Length: 439
Image (cartoon, one colour):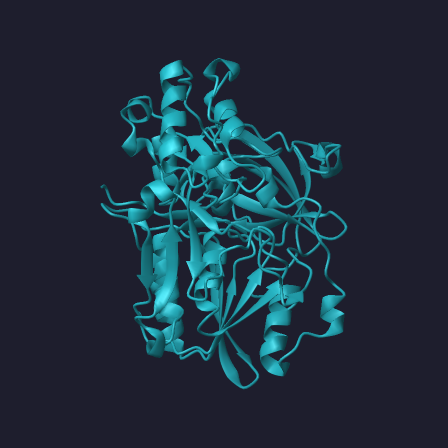
């Protein structure tokens, strides 16, 4: 059997989105392709026994309708179809678009939440904390839908599409920028720095997605290696990992990060298990820790939101049996299952450039923790504050994490800032694009 390429959760390409968008999908909707989808799902789908015994292919106008009609609801919110090129590019950060994210405050003011350095937005100097007041000359309120979401009408991901954005900057001035979409290489590390708190050196790491560095066999991230070596050189005693806008990505990179964070004493012990359906139980696997580097942490503090999903949740679950894990911010998304692409197992799908990525396995940690479809609850719920730059101590969630290190608790004043956003960036995308959502 070919080596299974494990992924967890919801993957991304920086495509423009508004209402939940579909992935780039092939146009081949013939009966041969539909039959191949059903046959491959019966063989590999984690909930394969839940697929209807008889499927009338003529009732479905598209491959997407077919897949949606046979998946196991409501647990499966994740299976999708895309193209092989889009899938492969997404895991190494080859993207197209403006290259930024957004977040709302409690009063529904819209802010740039992150920007990729080499994206058109990054090259134009956009920063986290810039308030978006207009898009293409219209106020943000005009893009709101009856559902509570937003359709910003930014067009598709194709290079050359332009949109105009009016910003209110932190100094109170305004600027209007026309930005043209282009292909770019995204970065996963948004910020890293050192704080002094509670008499300790504290590392802070804002990490946006679990992407591998491109190569013949992309299973490691050079960005992760560089960050962890930085923290090692600084002799940190505590670490805050900010995953609030991280929708997931590569299990291999999640494993790499987990191996940096685990203590030397626990190297060789069980990290997680993968369980496939009964037809594929021979491929069930256990993965053990293999310590990398010399970080010696007794706990990790994670900053999360409902946009923290899949591989973000897996790294939390991996570490929980072996160290104290503290979650600040909001409950995570809830995706304890994962996928790998299946076109390699179907000549019809492969020849028609249809990449089928359904749920194929479930994960569990060393304590057997596996069923977290409702997400991991935050230990301390604190509101988001995207109006502040990365690393700014006025950022409520960062301030709460530092306060916990100093006092062992988070104050009621901090807890009073909590609000649940009506619509988050993860809601603007589906399938492949949802794993690393960005415009």
